Length: 140
Image 1 (cartoon, rainbow, N blue to C red):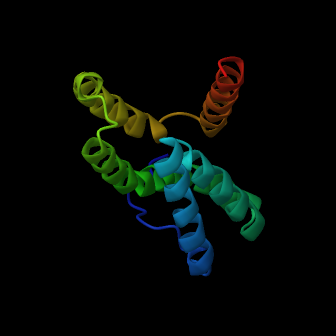
Image 2: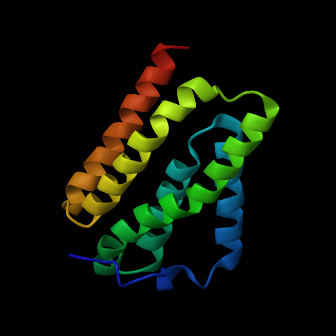
């Protein structure tokens, strides 16, 4: 089911304060840790949509939540990259070769977002969280 014609999340508009706080928190976490802001956005937006809509709308909104989180994190990722580079904490030798594959992977992922079944997207996201968490705890 294609969702490309829908450019906004109408079920989120009543709570601008929540969205401002969520964006600030996600940006802070991403800037501090280099990752995690998008995960926070997905988890909070999923919870919000589930609590403030019916089950059918919440299920349909899942793809919007993933796309919104990704779109919100893009500017902060670019800004963080610039600040890390200016501060001397960015390994440009490791960064440069990853740019093209990352862009291509992002394009493929965005294409697949509308093609994969929602239950598979949820499982993939959950698996990513689980594996990331376990690896971080084991490698401390």
